[in-house]
Image (cartoon, rainbow, N blue to C red; front, side):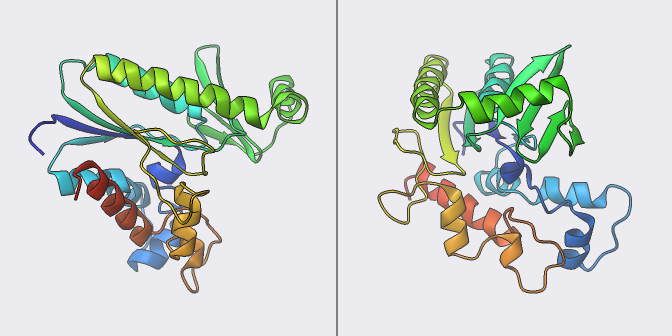
Length: 240
């Protein structure tokens, strides 16, 4: 795809390739023993960003990090693109799960969701500090679903405008269905109410935990899931 210098994919673990790096799943899918970092390399080489880069014949970068909130995803894309304005970039952002929360403290990124937190790439499975209690209060006492989506739509529109001014082609995909649509959102539709990857993949049995006899109950994308997501994105952006 000659008009671009670089493909950037960004999201949470669903774009990172989460689940494929699980040692048991890696051994199940590859019939190889997990040794060293071979399971992590397998994940890095077998997600939809890598597949799409190969299909488009473009160098690619996957900025995704596990447990990322939508704010963290947008911030990473902004930071990376702002440092690479000399390149013609094709950018695809995968929106995450609305209850996730992101902030920085002491120069480290904190990503929160119901099952734990990720601090600068390190996972903690238990929420027990004062900062963690802030997250619990935010979810139970502050979070408002309608307001969240109202501000998310505004942030997406502002980021789209920023990208357009800098000749960056930006698209969005979303794990959860959104209650609104934009011109830059790639729809994975089952019906008029569904435009997210999750239900689309689930209906097509493209999740890891839908593979018979898989040793770990993991709801991330299977290898076939990443390939089908790649094909859907490719057909949309190339207008096939």
